Image 1 (cartoon, rainbow, N blue to C red):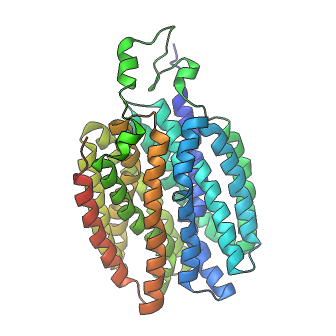
Image 2: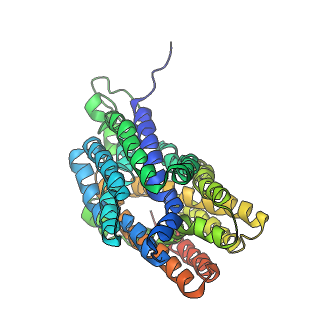
Image 3: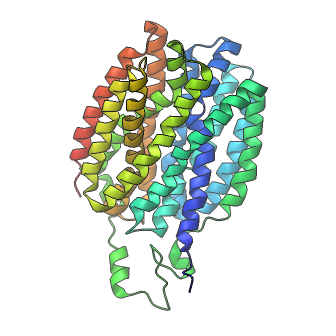
Length: 403
């Protein structure tokens, strides 16, 4: 007899593919647009970096609201409308004629991305898993890592057809892929005769399972926990460094004489190598204390940043990819797993929304600060070392998280 696949895993797959496509354009792949925009409009790196950092609005202003809506109305509707908005945002971005229009288009794009990735996809998966939440998050979040496969394609589209046409193609692709995937999403498993992790509820769910699943901390109590504050501050550190590296990787490598195709491959390798950390640290988080595992991911990122400041050498490139990428990938998985384990799932959407809202502060500061340092000093070296030090603070914050 062939065992039927638990439907939760189909939801994980749909979230994986949605995360893959959206993050490849809005997050990891946008570094390929940086130089063409500066060349055509004459804007500074600071101006373009700030515009790109506006995608932090998807987690700042919008994320707590999206989290509330995901808890209230479910993830399916939000993902559908988010996909529609991302497509419109990309097409509008292709029509950019001024810096103001560029900013406005990116805000629309950020709002759409916030509605169909991150908070919403994590909430969808958290509702269907408990015991296996670490590995489920790892698979889902690996979509962000696998988005590196699309980055070289984005570079070729820009170089072959121009950045405007590339954005139109990517916008239409968003609708063609994302709309069908949104209909795969379902809300809580109990509505379909299941409990989290795939046990069939044959008429009655055992009293143990009901009690086990109902061990929840109220939203207001969770907000008062110091551990929640420490987790938020640690996420600010992580995202500040991550967004700066992801946005400035191609200009940084280009400033050292590396060609665009080669720099594009390195940019693509960053999310791809993160898959190692998403699965590896996701599994370790299901086995060991999650706060210690998170602290290790910050250590990996810090050592990776030290290698990043010496990218003139090939060994430094490999060392950076083997340390930094798994570190940030593991952290992305474990932040949600910690919330699910320590605070339950009834308010998961609101909690992860606030967490990512805090992260957006770092997401706005990091890229803008790195762009300003380069415009001022003509080099990124100093800011990479500062960011390496920030990872030490992240380790301290992670270790202060208490169950």
